[in-house]
Length: 267
View (cartoon, one colour):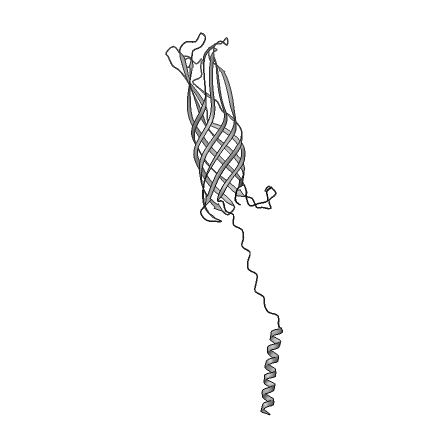
């Protein structure tokens, strides 16, 4: 009898174990897929286009000798605004370094060169008929700047500042009421100064329709820069029947706003 009871218990235990083995096992949940983190570190190049305008552009004139009294008597303008504005477009090359992936501080350096459509001529007639003509033109503007910003993953907000240079042409000519030239001077050279500003840049997703390369490497930006290249003085010696000389001071200062498209290597 005892053997029968032990045998029945053993059979029940084996049957329960076999039934448990046939039950489906609970599968572990799949590991989460990490979200890609954009890295701003790397070399980039791109193009830009925008609008440029002068902010300080008054031309000032004075006589050199006592007999050059045209400004004093109102026959020549003592101060004349010479505003300029136009299109700007060019390219840039730079390098960024991000201290931490994702969000974090970013430092870099950028150099750019752009065509500037700055060209203005003004002609005024004085109280006694004297004709005064002023002209200022700029063909290009370039900068070499540092950049410091903070990245919020694909969005970078930054400030920038550094060295600026530009080609500048200044010219002034005075004539009698009959149109006979009496004083003339011009100057053409590269002026240097500084530029400062800031902007925002965004890294396009690989599936964006603007991202034609469909890679994690294309960024778009919008920025504003202030530039100051100082003053330039032009001597107007006498020509024709003129006597003595005048001096004219031109200013070269302004702001530009532009948008750009960059391609970053190594993404």
